[in-house]
Amino acid sequence: MRPGRIQAASVALPLVAGMTLLQAGCGDDDNPNAPAASPGRVSVELRHVVNGAALVFDDIRYTNAAGDEYSVVRLEYLLTNLALHAADGSIHGIRGPFYNDARTAASLQHVLEQVPSASYDALSFTFGLDETMNISDAFLAQPWNSRMAWPSTLGGGYHYMILDGFVRDPAGDRTYNTHLGRTQQEPHFFHVVLPIDTIAVDGNDSSVRVTMEISEWYTGPHDYSFPQNPFIMDMPTLQQALMQNGGSVFSASSVR
Image (cartoon, rainbow, N blue to C red; front, side):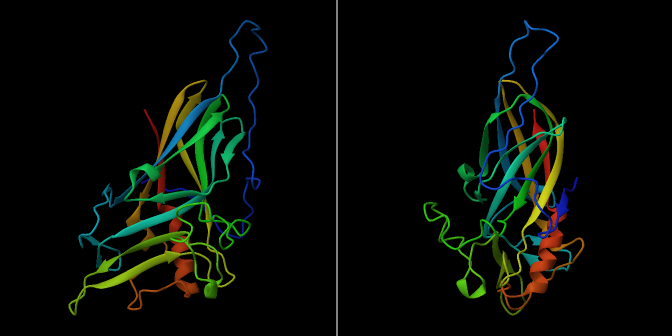
């Protein structure tokens, strides 16, 4: 799997808050009769795999790097700052947030409209919400507002991710909760840049597929063993480990 490049939460992000970024390409000055370049649409599709195979819910069939056998019963997460990067250095982005529920296909496609004519060779996003967006009840109008809420006693705002399931245990299968977000005042969002095969936008529709490899949340650089206490939201060491493991979780490809 081709990993993305991760930037830690403290690194300034390249997108300006609140607005779509457009860097218009130049026309063909050498040929005044050439048709004007037209914007297009780019769909970003999310998919989820474990060890390269499509995610299957509700079955303890997976083993993480620490040797834990586990299932996945819930996977929901937020992306922000979704952007396409052109070969000429320009960027087209939308702030978001973009909610994803791996059980609901309709939530896993996000369309970037009016993408300026250009050749794009990378996709980037923030996993989670930066501190300017991560404010309790900032998205009351969204149906996921309460589902993704982060407890006020732990700093408030929203979960970046809820990944739940069961771990096999001789004494009886037990639950785990891989919940990523802010621990007190320490954020754990991160920025990912993914190379893609070049897509040429000029009045057409294109697609990019982003794949989450779930097994990578639990390894590289940290082999993660599910703790006996399933609730990790107030454990900064585990939150930090998950944030750092996130650098190899995602890959992207152009859809032909």
